[in-house]
Structures are given as structure tokens and as C-alpha cells.
Amino acid sequence: MKQLKNILLISGSGRNCGKTTLACHLIGQLAKEGVVFGLKITPHFHLTGRGQQLLAEGDGFRIFRETDRGSGKDSTRMLKAGAGEVYFIQSTDEHLTEVYEHLKNLLPPGVPVVCESGAFAAVFSPGLHLLVKGPRADESKQSYRRNLEKADFILTQQDFSLTGAGFQVDFKGNGWTIQKTQNDQIRRSA
Picture 1: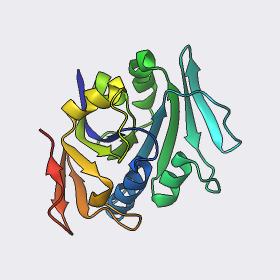
Picture 2 (picture 1 turned 60 degrees about the horizontal axis):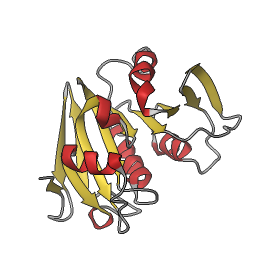
Picture 3 (picture 1 turned 45 degrees about the vertical axis):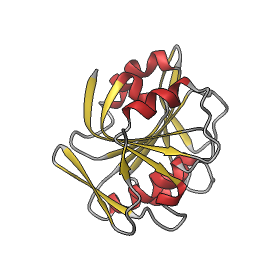
Picture 4 (picture 1 turned 180 degrees about the vertical axis):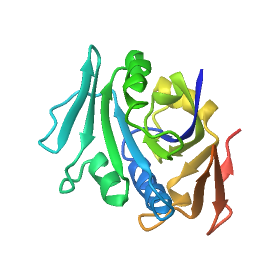
């Protein structure tokens, strides 16, 4: 399994559990220190708007650069939060390795990347993996069960809010640090 130390992965227990809210908080923190990139990876293929510039596509994947700052899409929210670049990726799980071959030409080495994806950890080992467990966790999802085992930290919505993360992340060189700033609720996964 290829290790990608500069990637902070956010996975979750399902839809609307707070993954993008957390990603945007962390992008905002990291952007104060320098350049940070955002990735939104979804297995769902749907129409995109004029704000997504198609960069690459193949059988089972499409990679877009997000340029739309006006919509409420997750990738737009990442851009508004301070990411220097955001890539929106539609990909089946089987094509994530091929997607990475394209991404490594787009992502500068050593730059922190905040990635929201449920499938990423099946193929790659991120530098830090945060899992957001919502109140209605979908225990039937294989990716969620797999990510529960792999996550470095399991968070609930009480660990962060609409206005802040409650903890600070930093990326220096090839490693991530995480430090509490509000309460004692952030915990390492089992």
C-alpha cells in the first residue's frame, strides 16, 4: 500500500455527517501557514457545471479542477476555505490508483492535501486519517467499516462545530501533528 504522507484523509459514516465542514476548517487552518490543496473524491458520476475544468478522464474516472467560487458544492466550499487548488474526482474504487497517477503531476511534492473520500484508504495510506462518525452511521457500508479500523482518530460532530475544529493540525516536512485547542474529546481510534 503506497504511503502518501502529505495527505490528510477525512472519511465518514455516511452523508451529512460533517466531513466537508471539517475539511474546510482544516484547510482554513493550513492556509494560514502556506499553500494547501483540496481533493473531493466521490464514486458518484453526475453532471458538472461550467466551474469544473476537465483535466483527465478514463474508463471509470474523471478529474476536474474546481474554479467555481459561487456554488455550494463541497469542492467549492474547499476553495472558499482557502485551498490553493481543489480537484473534484469522480472515480470507481478500482480506478483510484490510475487517478493518483494523474494527481501526482498536479499536486506539488510536500504540499499538504486535505482529501475527502470514503474509498481512498482502501488503496493508499494517508499521513493522517480522520473519520467523522455521524449520529446515523451507516453500518452496512463496507468502506465505513474498513475506515473505522484504519482511522487515526474518530470524531463526532461534538468534536468540531460550524465555526471551528476544536483542534489544530499542522504539516511540517513529511509529518502531521494534531493538537487539542478546546476540549479533551478528540481521541485516537482503537
